[in-house]
Image 1 (cartoon, helix red, strand yellow):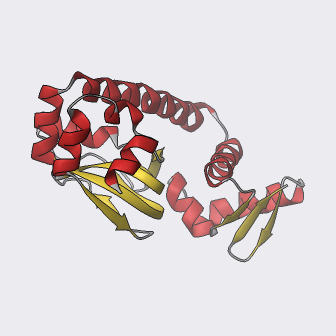
Image 2: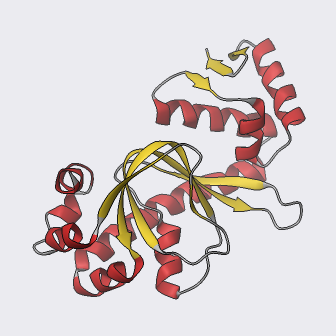
Length: 211
């Protein structure tokens, strides 16, 4: 199962002579339910996740009011670049990662990852590519947070969720959306009702449908 997962979702790692065998020797394949916290702020990184299926989200806690802001998603074929960089620096995590949809994850123990990084250049290339990808996503988040109105920010979030889940019907609540955006449920409810009035979306209990 791990070999098939690596071949399908992490071909750059699987095609490196010796690296695939190394991963097969040290990794495990685990399933995490929705809502599982796989990395907490302030904790040391014990393992590096390679997402095979499902979806995870990475958050940062705002220091003054304690609100959590969604930074980026981890999709199949990706890992948490913040986990990798934090592990390399032997620091505690500054972000939190939560499973959004039930996920199958290849788990690399922290000490084994350090050995892999020293021995296989392809692993570092994978991390650099992932860092560049997530850096672009972070820039987009900063742009939306800094320069966009809350209504625009909400629409960008909903469109991203619809794209990732391949559906215009999102099973979510106003409270969940507010949590992801570091806002209040009251503000989000007001904005959603305005967008519904404008004909952009349709609201039902526990459902937001983009039109």
